[in-house]
Image (cartoon, rainbow, N blue to C red; front, side, top):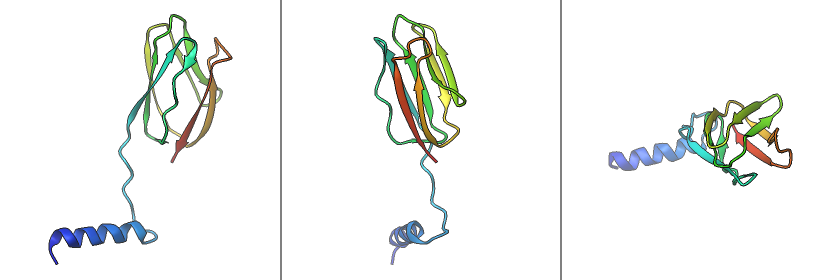
Length: 108
């Protein structure tokens, strides 16, 4: 058996043996666009450690506010970043425009 085949077998076994460490995906950066008084589509597959780049392309000031979890305030035409530090489901609103809503779903 060659080394590549042996490595493939070990990797397959590691994915199925309880207690064996499996590498986590690298953190990623995703973008949420705010425009015309709406939050753009929420990214899927969010994990702790990922970063969200919020882009306010609107002419109004906005926020992404989940009380007790995060409060990002963005003047018109600016960007902001936040790194996800906790798993969970986080409903949020814009404190300036309460009809603007979204939900972040973050896995460990």
